Image 1: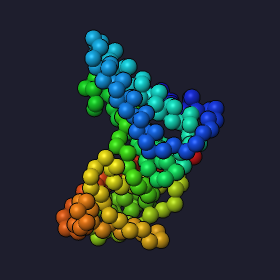
Image 2: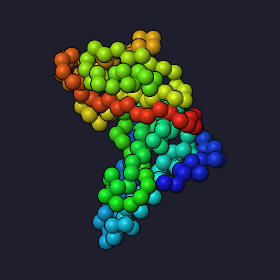
Image 3: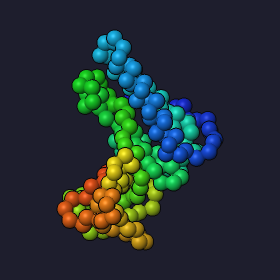
Image 4: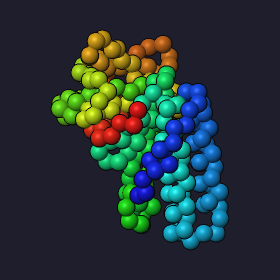
Length: 204
């Protein structure tokens, strides 16, 4: 996979990214991928074109990194972009074969926008890995720095959300808000929780 950061050496200033602007860019990308599928292209050409367009979007975000509050890369090669108001977007690095069933190497695939992001140590991740889906769990959070693990909560596109409470360096997972005014504190939580890999590079 080519290095998308090659286009980000020149500083690009502008107003902070909004979540709506990010959604618009991803919609344009999705529409382009749909058009590519409609073309009579052989499988390898189609895959190459889709990979290239996603790479360009990642490169454009890196070029405009100063419009984000945080930009970093994790151990597996994924890029994370966080807006000033806390929303996060992950360009996941996955193998060509995993998505397309062919090809060699890795490419990017954008994941759903999340509304909240925190950071935990690898040790805390390992400790809570099998318990984080249950209400009542208390997680120790860390400052943003190399080596910590991103913890994203709440997919914005869902109609339900994980309810949590942050007090000092502790994050308490309370339950699920189904949108009916009640918080469900029984069973697995719904709303989206994703834990990434350790941060290996900080761009901002």
